Structure formats: structure tokens, C-alpha cells
Length: 152
Image (cartoon, rainbow, N blue to C red; front, side, top):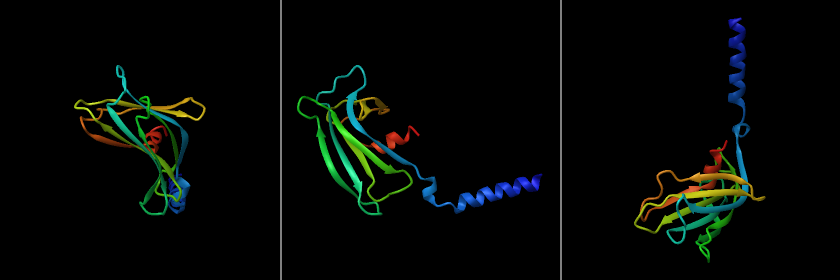
């Protein structure tokens, strides 16, 4: 019995080692709207400046190219932009897309932003609160693919 168990486990281990890395790959895909706000009680007016960049993996190197960029607040203190993520989690793959946020606290006080992701149909995908907030006059960089990978 013990020999049979060892043989089965050895076979499974050999198959796992021989399988290509892509067999274990996980792709994150999502698109919709992204809203930046402040945790309650807070009204976001001009405390934060947010740049949302959509980046594409152009080559099979660490090189990423910015495809679009939006700086918020938009007129009327609007902090909502579209986002798209189509990214391989195991490493760079040609034509991967990701949305990256650069959030700048422009005040002398710590700010506690919340990021709300909604699907194309408007249903809630994820709410993400930045633990510890953003220090005065500091910048935080957030990849939406990383936020979404926490769901898996």
C-alpha cells in the first residue's frame, strides 16, 4: 500500500513539474467604472489629485506603454473614470492591459481614500479602502489588477 501511494504521488509531482507554466496561469479580466472617494465622513473636493493610466505590455520585457491617461478631479469635482484590466498574473504577456492609479494627497493632513470598482452593468465589483491612508503631501501608486487579484 505504501509503495502504491509513493508511486501515485511521484507521478503527480512529475506531471506538475512537466506541465508548462501557462497551465497554472491566471488571467484577470474586468472593465467598468472606477470612483475615488473618501471614507466616511468625508467629501472629496480637491484634497486628492488622481491620475488614471491605462498601460499596455508592448514587448515581453518589463516595458509598459501608456495608452490613455486621465487626471482627476474632472470639472465638477468628478472622480470617476473608466478602467480596463486584461492581465496575466504569472508574468508579462504581450498586449496585457492594466489601469494604474497615481493618487496624490495635496493637503497637510492624512487622507483615507476608498476606491469603488463597478462592472460595465453598474453592479459593484469591489470596494477597496487604503489601509493607513495617504500621508500628507504623499503619492500612492495602485494597480487595479493587484486589487482585483485579492478577489481570487
